Amino acid sequence: MYEGAVQDLIDELGRLPGVGPKSAQRIAFHLLAADPADVRRLVVALTEVKERVRFCRICGNVAEAEDCRICRDPRRDLAIVCVVEEPKDVVAIEKTREFRGRYHVLGGAISPIEGIGPDDLRVPELMVRLADGTVTELILATDPNLEGEATATYLARLVKPMGLRVTRLASGLPVGGDLEYADEVTLGRAFEGRRLIDV
Amino acid sequence: MSLYRDEAVVLRTQKLGEADRIITLLTRRTGRVRAVAKGVRRTRSKFGGRLEPFSHVDLQLYAGRSLDIVTQAETLRPYGERIVTDYGRYTAGTAVLETAERLTVEEREPALRLFLLVIGALRTLCTGEHAAPLVLDAFLLRALSVSGYEPALSGCARCAAPGPHRAFSVPAGGVVCADCRPAGTASPSPPAVALLDALLTGDWLAADASDPGDQREGSGLVAAYLQWHLERGLRSLRLVERV
Ligand SMILES: [Zn+2]
Image (cartoon, rainbow over all chains, first blue to last red; front, side, top):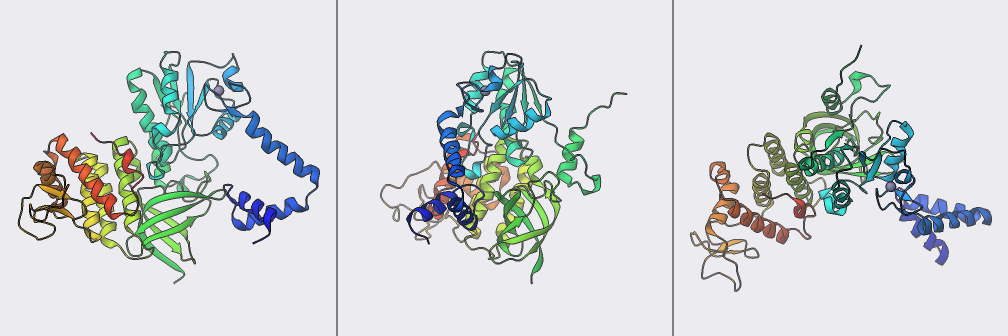
């Protein structure tokens, strides 16, 4: 245990995800030794992120205005919405440059064992968004793990009466790997999601 | 015994650091074990989808001081694949896993009968031969029983006077006769209590034919009984889809 301010900093850092007590101590002493100007920049960045950044009222992505950059962009297709768990998934999909529609960020996945149900996510907001009929295709891009799959199953059933085209991102073999090393679950999914080759 | 091999069901996974996960396992021989799966969140991980909840796996583990380390994993039955295609089965299945975790109070204390009950419940959920909430309630009653909390469903829980009795007292441990009945004890409908008896004894013919209203009432009794015996409530129970 250290005195006052140093211990407070260690405690606060230790509450961050992925930072254990040892790392918290290391970061604290790094900051203590760092140039004051560097530390001030970090303080400004921390303050600004809480003051300026909010969540887009349409899609739930991080935004610096009421609506995010993507929802404000008139070139984006209003008819297709891609549902993801987190803002970082938007970034990942944007990097592919494959998708020209808009997003809906749920804020997580359904996880009953953690007490997280559909109403704890931005599912009601999605239903409101789909109600006026502008959106005709929903792409379910939740994580390819059990909770992401369960969330997709739930959403597919929920929107079924609306008559939308609902698709799920294909999940299958990682590019660059050898088939023999794929596990049964991944290989099974890859079979399900196989596509026709046009020649 | 630094390296050991065991069969297990994955109960829960939690993120650890950048790419690892802590996997909570119910093993056949060693009871509940927590182990680290290194790099499992990377798309090229050798574990792939093998260490997801519901998976029945054959594992090689390295025994650590607090956490073990998964060194090899082979799938025996990927129950999650089938369970996750139906939201009702998924929520019921999750309650099975959470209960198994909560009933194994101490790590590494063998719990073979509970392990077999979990496997049985997951297998039944996959086939869809019985309604998911019934499979869950049957599991809960049996899991409580093998943990030493078998509810009395015909003879009086206090004086063992032969039943049937109308009153059901959670603190007393099941049905109670008119003499033993504590003040304020509820009297559920007799078919709901009969359903619980059918579920506990495995009379699926009677259970499948039961009335939905009695099923709901029975589930309520099982939930109250379970909460009484666990220190805090199950998080997943609120989210289980009932008919
Ligand atoms: Zn937006």
